[in-house]
Image 1: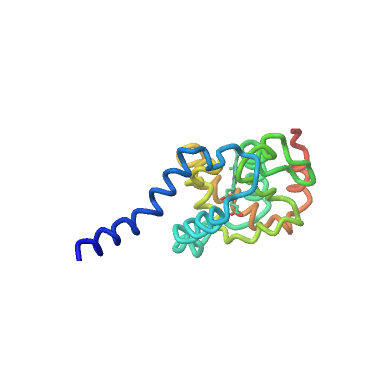
Image 2 (image 1 turned 90 degrees about the vertical axis):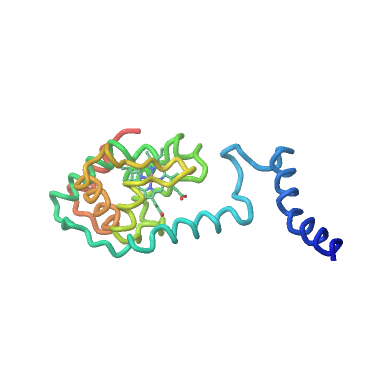
Length: 171
Ligand code: HEC
């Protein structure tokens, strides 16, 4: 019986010991170049999804009218474009050097623009740990964060003046 318990304990500990050896032997990639480990993307996505469950349906307290979208474009140019790109612009060196890569949020070919406003708002407010995505809580007002969320949700149908404001930013 004792042997059985001993075997059980060793069996349970083995994955942790192997994982620890993997870490201290330098097996874990820490540079930003390279692709994610097999489970890395799955774990990150699942964790974000779980944290986001109640946020997605949060209705936006502001509408997507031209005034709010223009204000959102201003916030975007000042605080987001360096990582998430300008309208029709090339990704910056900063964006290219990050891991994970920041999605180019104004690129019509990038299929990431379909987050509900509540989800975008949560990510902008709280950031995403260990990714380079900053949390803006306490630095942007709630209204500014909703304005830039609306900008992203409506990225595929922005009025001309807003597109112009987003194109002007130099890199
Ligand atoms: C220093 C770089 C950086 C800045 C500045 C930055 N972000 Fe991000 N952002 C990231 C990265 C990296 C990710 C990807 C995180 C991931 O893969 O989970 C991200 C993810 C996001 C996402 C989620 C996209 C998705 O498909 O899930 C949203 C929305 C977002 N950022 C909005 C913004 C807004 C709005 C601003 C400006 C107010 C901003 N970000 C500023 C780096 C940045």
